[in-house]
Image (cartoon, rainbow, N blue to C red; front, side):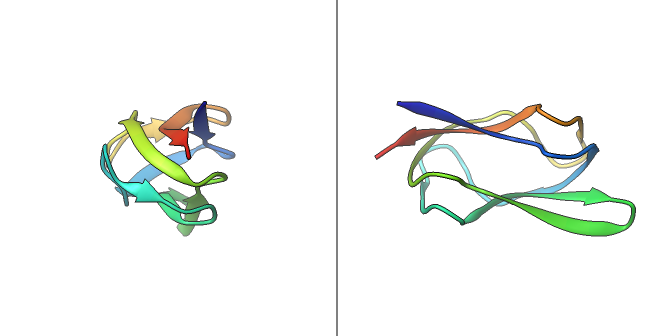
Length: 73
């Protein structure tokens, strides 16, 4: 089952911490957002394999935008 990791705030993508094919654990940071000069790590909510990285560093995201897709294991 595929799971989307979504942005919870409006911000800039500071860095992407995973790549397609990477195995991730729940609570692992997958993207770091910057908002109001604060760095906010976005965590995977499920364990699995990254199937798609939707954003790249420098992108602006809004609340609810998908960041990374994970195939649950």
